[in-house]
Length: 97
Ligand SMILES: [Zn+2]
Image 1 (tube, protein in one colour):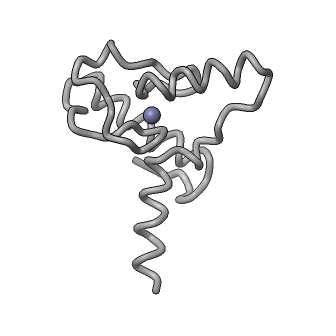
Image 2 (cartoon, protein in one colour):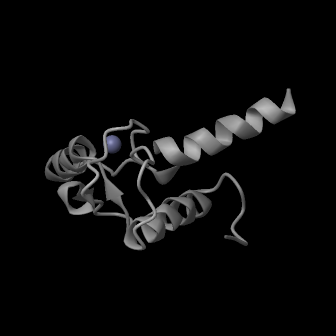
């Protein structure tokens, strides 16, 4: 991280893929799903779903949602609407007050 501009789609993707790297290195345990933000990732990484749009594992329901959107010809969920970047953006808002 990062010369990307905070709050942009590119920034969101980089943030998400930084978690993907941690997952890859075996230190991503205990994090919520980066897409929906719920703590429902399987501890066994490969039992989760690999996102079609970023190098990161997401929970099975999110994997299903990506597949269904794809089948329906709908746009993928923008990275900025994933739970992980949203969490960061909300923290930033709290700082502003
Ligand atoms: Zn999810």
